[in-house]
Image 1 (cartoon, rainbow, N blue to C red):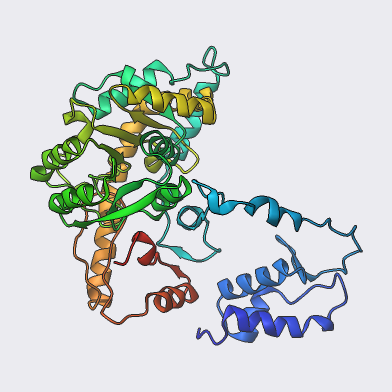
Image 2 (image 1 turned 120 degrees about the vertical axis):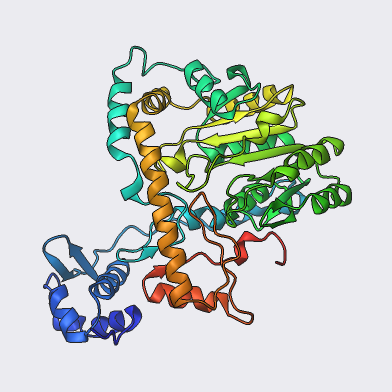
Length: 444
C-alpha cells in the first residue's frame, strides 16, 4: 500500500471533517480510514492520537474514536506567573543552576509512539527482559522474613558481597554501597568528587544523560576523545594538565555509544595519569552483563586493579533486566567511601528492601544464568542482522567499530549530511534513531 498522507496531513483532513459528526458521534473505523486515505494503520493511529491530545476526539479501546463533547466551563486557573520571579531571582549568583535540562535522560527513557521501531532506546527490548524470572524473584522476596522492614543503610550484606565478587580483585563487601540504579550512583559520585563549577573530564562522544547529570550538578564537562581502543591517554593527560580537573568519568567496557573497549596497554596508563593528577576515575561499568556470544574473555573492571583508591566503580543490574529493576552498586576505597555513603543517605535514605531482596533472589537463581546465556546469544544475532543490513542497504554509512557487547552501533554519516533532517525523515518512516550531536560536550 502506498502511503500518500503524513500524520499531520491526515489529522488536518479529519479535523476539517469533524463538523459532520454530532458531539459523541462515532468516527469511521480505523480500517475504513486506512482504505479511504491509503495510509498505514500506524499513521491513522497517530493522527487520531494527535486529535485526542487536542481534545477534539475521544478514543475508546475496542469501540473506536468519537467526536469529543464540548467542555463545560471550569474554574479559572490561578495566576502562577509569580513563579517566574521566584525561580529566577538572583539566578546569576547560583553556583549550581536551578534550571535543569533533562533532554539527555528523557531521550533514552521516553517510549516511542505505537508502531515505531525503537533504535534509540537505552534498555533491552521487552522480549529480551527476564520478566518471568523477575516476577518469581519478587514473589519469593516478598515472603522473606523481614523483607518489608528497614534495610541497612549501605544495603543488604549479601547483595554487597555479590557485587564485590563481580568486581573482583581485592574489593570487599565493606567497600560497596547499594544504590537505586546507575544514574543515581553516578549523581552521588559526581557530587562527592567535584565541587560546583569545577571541570569534569568525560569521554567524547559519551552518553548524553551523563552530560546532563554533570551540568545539573553545576559541573563543566570537558571532552577527551575516544578511538576504537578507548580513551586516548595522551589527550587525557593533556586535559588534566590544562583544566586542573580532579574527576574523569569513563566507560572502559563497551563504551556508549562507540562500543569501544579500553585496550590492555591503556588501562594501567589511565590509572597512572589520574593518580599523578590527584584525580578520581569514575568507572561506569554499565553493560558488563550484555556481552555478545563471540566476545571472548572480558577484561576485569578497572577497580579490580586499583589498590590506591583512584577508581570509584558503578555497576548495575538494570541494563540486563528491566528499566524498573533499579539496583546498582557504588564501590570505592578510602575516605571517599564515607562521603559517598553520607550523600546517598541524605538524598534517598536507602534502596527499598523488597527490591534488594528480589535482586538477591534473581541473581541466586538458575534462571539468572540461563537469562545471561540466552541474552548473549540473542544480542549477537541482532547485532549481526543489523550490521549485515547496513552493509547491504546503506553502504555509504561508515561503521568504524563493530562491538562485541552492549546494544549500540555508532555510525558516521557521509560528509555534508543533515543529521537532523535524516533523523526526522526516519521518524516519519516509523523508525526512531538517536542523533549523534548530543553525545558531544563540545564541537565534535
